Image (cartoon, rainbow, N blue to C red):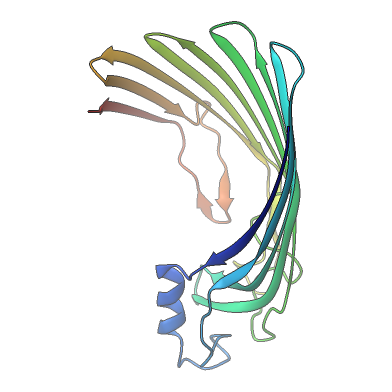
Length: 232
C-alpha cells in the first residue's frame, strides 16, 4: 500500500513565544532581534510518501519519506535574555522505517528508526545565539524498540529509546555545545480490573540514566508512577 500526502502547514505563536516577544518589543535591537517587528504565524507546505507492506503472517513493515518547507519560522530563545522572532525559512526532511514482528498471539516486537535533517536561513544579525545553518536540539538519528505483551487481563510494554547527539547554540553566545546521545528504558504494566477499570504501573528511566534534552537541564532519573483509570 502506498500513501501520498500534501498538506498546508500553519502554526500560531505559543503563549510563551508571544509573551517574550511582547516583553521585549521596545527593548531595542541589541537585546531583541524582533525590535518593533510583528510576530507572525509560521506557514508552509508538507509532503510525505509512505509505503506499507505485509511480508508474511508475522512480519510487516513501513517506510516513509517527508519534507517540510516553513516560512516565518519562530526562533525562540528560551534562556536569558528571552526573545522570539521570525526567521525567513526552515527546511526539514527525513525518513522513517518501521518493522513489526508478531511473534505469537500474545507477543510482538516493533522497531522504528528515524532520520532527520534541518536547515534554516534568515537569522537576524543581532541574534548571536542559536546555530546559524540548522535548528538547535534536532538529533539526526532516533531508534525505538517496543516489546508488547497482550493477554487479558494483562498488558506489558518494554520500551527502549535511543537518541543520537545533538547541538545547542542557544545557551552561550558564540559557543556550540554537543549534547551526548542517550538511551532510556521504560516498562509499563496494566491490569484490567473489569467494569471499564484498569490499574497501571509505569517505571520510567528504568536504569536511572543521566541525560539531558536541553543543555544544563537534567531530565528526571528513575521514576515510579501509578495510574487508575475508570471509563464510562
